[in-house]
Image (tube, rainbow, N blue to C red):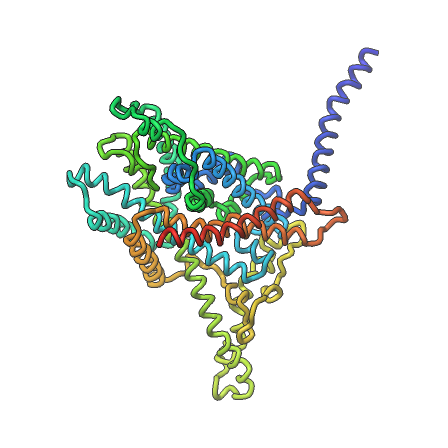
Length: 549
């Protein structure tokens, strides 16, 4: 009896884990079907090697950057309690936007890029809008980083090189020379050697938080001569409530510091075992770490400003004296990070501008090509020639069909377990006003060949971008103006409006199963995010224009 009982016990011990594994596997498959998730390369693809921790680190390195220098200014403008509340709301809303974007990409058939998701949800015109928004975002980020670089390098040059304060013209000249030194790097096709700059950026932000916390805690008490009632109110008393215009001026900064939506999709396509829980853990973990860093930096910067009785500036390191050793070391580290980040920002901006220019050229030439294609049978081969007639006849299709060659040839997108809602032919989703038989959507369906740009094109486009950014930098002294225009327009559009709108529209697609895919809470959250974005854009744009004039 004992042997029989022991045998049944050991058999149950061997069978139960197997049954549980099978049950969990079936439950996961049923959940995936109900959520309509389709993954790039498949759920168990060998190319998916990224862990959740790797994704969190990568997202944090993308989020944290030069905007961290303006966090104390934004929180001081909004007030301490309200600033923390707005920072929390901004991190939450931006994380929701990234979550909706990733969910929409999976539902649309496992799309890889931001513009593909917008095209599947809103049509080809949204693809062009997304490219324009990213171009403007990259350009304004170039201007902001160049301005911060000038403000960080000027105290170093005054202290260690000249030994005297620098005039504004000298500071502009110094910043321009530093930017021109890295312009040749923008002529290259790739910058793989600078791929670790983002990690250096995170290190510099952590160092900034540490220095601000140390300086804020070790700041000496106010002298005895400043113990009158009026001075006590200024130093230790409760601050006056912030004005509405000041709070609105700070909102674009809170939006800018969490922009990462167009960089999150590549991380999700490389995530190993990309379940909803792992995806959510990656997004929540990254935004939680970034929020903690920003909150400590803002609180410490405000504390240091109150202790030293000076207003908090849009570049928090400008409050520190030139002789401060820790501040000088941090200025040097951030200057190197900002300087090396300029080519990394210029390259995608250049490639997308080339894509837009190529699309505009096709749009302008399409009426002539369409007319030639209609007249070629009438004029005959003697007038146009057989080759010209063939070129005119294939102009409306050959350039665009190459966009989906990978799908028709059985590439990764065509090997998904479920059919994608994205049609196999580009003309099936073309919309917008037609010009000569070619719509706006067809025009921007150009094949992205980053490495095929000739050297002359790279030199001209990169030189124009960097030259125009230098001109804008020379005319601006306050980086909050740049953050204001960026955050109130493209920042809100890319972080709130477009992800929420694409998610809502993609949720309306019929499901593969009879089970309803309606999730009222998620739809309500997406609708709320969309409404907040649509309200913020006109309010912040108006306030930014009024305050900058």
